[in-house]
Amino acid sequence: MSWKTLAATGLLVSLAAAPVSAQDYPTKPVTVIVPFAAGGPTDVAARIYGEFFSRTLGQQFVVENAAGAGGTTGALRASRATPDGYTIFVHNVAPHVAGPALYPSATYDPVKNFEPIGTLAFAAHYIVVNKNFKANNLKEFIDFAKANPGKINYGSAGGGSATHLACVLFGQQAGIELTHVPYRGTGPALNDLVAGTLDLMCDQGLNMMGQATAGTVKVLAVAQKTRFPGLPNVPTSAEAGLPGFEVSAATAMYAIAGTPAPVVARLAQTMAAAYKDPGVRKRIEDLASELPGPGQDTPQALGQFTRSEMERLGAAIKKGNVKAQ
Ligand code: MLT
Image (cartoon, rainbow, N blue to C red):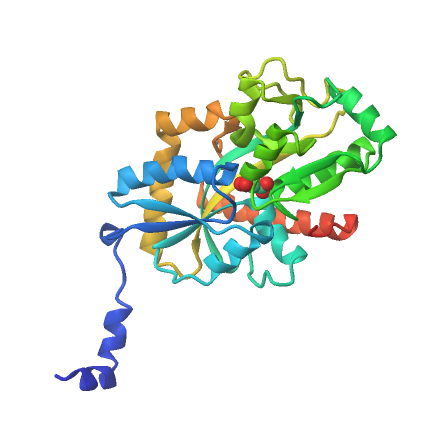
């Protein structure tokens, strides 16, 4: 039978669409799109899990940083990738779902265009200032900011990123006016905080833990109910005088919608195994972050969380009139 006849009978088409079995996947390297610059929290979490996936599945999971526009450049690119399991996406849930509400160019649907695989880490945000900043605690910082409206600048991973939204919330709850400086990721923003160009970041432990323990930045508070044992002298927001300021970022892995079910299942099984791996667990926990607990550790739980965050943040963006810049 010739190729022409094959095509005419539709056999060629059905061969091309033959179902992929979980055992067949992966047979070549997998690209992991990270929509922020290298060295930041999303990149760090993607690489920690990527190493485990490479080791377990026998093919390299290669991170590609596609940064820009608060993560929406990479999200758009991922949403258009071939859904065959050879492109997957690691993003922070907040900017993932907030992107289309903030950027007209972000013409992807955070729920419909992606298939949830699992949450990599939940990371509390920290109020971090450059080490020469005049304030030595949160109260002094807020007093200084009130006396100098708009004069304090903060760096984020771009409009709508987790670090942007956390500082918007911080400013609202503390009653202070701060000036936003967007970057392509919190990795480069942290470099400028250490260099002294920036005053403030509302950063995740996944990013700034090394600088915090080295004393190259000052950490004024953690925005959660309990102190992190690795930074025992950093007070909680309530202890520091700002009760109720609690913000956590969730970094998650998605396949592209339309990826064959056996491939999605293989990725989800590998994620479940990663949660049990002592090496992955230690590396995430040492960076002041938590792995998902019972009830949070399934693709279904991530799907539900993605949908509820989309509603919650969409409403907050409208109400607070939050802009991308
Ligand atoms: C964010 O702020 O949304 C991200 O964590 C930024 C990053 O990974 O660089």
